[in-house]
Length: 509
Image 1 (cartoon, rainbow, N blue to C red):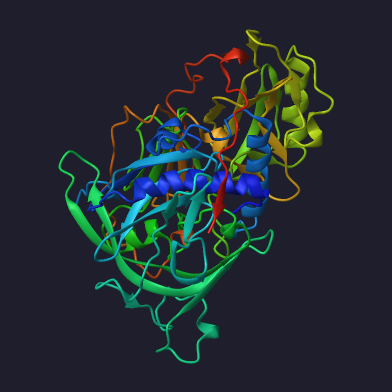
Image 2 (image 1 turned 180 degrees about the horizontal axis):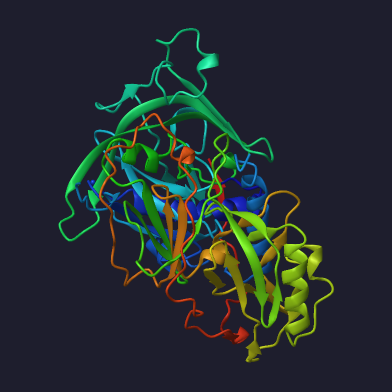
């Protein structure tokens, strides 16, 4: 989840991360069904934590350009019996969508003894959980233009009484070929596609502090294998996930896999993406009984949350186009190849009753943008993706608004891809999404992330830790009892979108 920004953009991104780090500095405590709150980097609650309101506002041209840059970088990261209570992070199950990091969500996690808190990016498109650790190349602090310095927590392997080396003979060591012997410490390296972005170091085991995600909130200190990130490069030094990244992918090294293999939760988790920047993540939650479902397309060599879309409906235009796409919480905006990209954009263009802006493509990541004026009522065509199995995925808000001095634009929030199809976070907004690796399907249900009731499954004790969940048999998709579109309006009033704001610049130490 790294992204290349201009110097000013990266400093502003660091500021938002700084806000998250303040959240992470709160004390943490963690068993069974576990979760955390998630925050978007642009959310008002996150900005309010430090009393900073002079950040780039959502809706400005700079906001969308920066997030598109970030997406291009992260797209290369490896796309290249018992009834247990769900689990979440000890600091809570809230996640934060932080403005300066686009549509990404972050959670406050605590690790080690004594517990140390980190604000980590949540990424379903990669597997490894890593933290800045005894590092020679990493972001160690942020300096505001007013001179105030906030230090970021750095994990100290020797400073935690519960830490252990992970040896090369461990089945979670994926770079055994780099080891002189099985008794050596296991190294790791994750390379990201763009701008020389990478993290390298060695694997460690230490306690991740979790709690049950219920009214009792019992602690659970859970041994977790993660990366001690000694050297970060590229975008990670420019403000992208400077305090760590939590991979939520399908491989055995990911946190969901480790929790399931230890028998702590069922092999699934849910993430909720609220329209206000709040969200939630819960391990062991299998979603709602009447949620939509579609099976994962599994590749044992490179397992991802890949699904099949069989039909595109824009307004009244129906097209039977089948294609695969990856649900990736680490990508801000949805990006699609042709012919699905052409079908959606041209159908949208034919139905929207607005004048297309001819110059917006010069610096914005969106090709289809339209001129709007204040207080204008606009009917936006609906967008529905029919999934394999027949359930409908109604995109709740497919547009973005861009405003500033002498500019007012409405854009279709889809970018053209030159490689893999990705359903990004903007298409997940307003949904509670379930990543069910036990039964190998994706689930979804419209949610505001506040009123959900958790649902958990019995733990499958027969699941072998040595077997990747990606090797399970593909299930048949089941139909959603209700395929009605969500109850929401597609009318917007551009006067309510955020206007251009001045920047509070930060320098990374």
